[in-house]
Length: 154
Image (cartoon, rainbow, N blue to C red):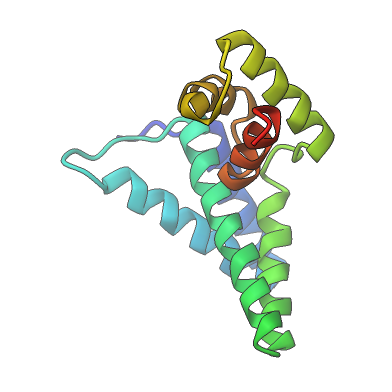
């Protein structure tokens, strides 16, 4: 299990660079991301090396956690903790593909609805199955589902 993906190599190189530069936030965030990737690699019945796409999914999940935690802290009046989460999120976002805006997401959802011939909410799963690989890493699941609902007229 010595071969690694390009993205994981980049994360490890950047971790070493940030440690040398004494960038505490970046170092801690990259350590956390690499730990999450390692945990995913050993999850299940057999250890495996994640592909770049799978590493991207882990990073996307970690970014979502930071975004949700920041919102929760703001709601609880804990701005200093929200700032910490947002700083970590900013580091993670440098490794993620550019996020789709709502207009582009709606356009892709409408095309997927047309492609599947879906006519109502009962076919939402079929549309999601077609759309998700096309937007992988560029939009969160909740945003994708909302775009499909709009495209289906729900």
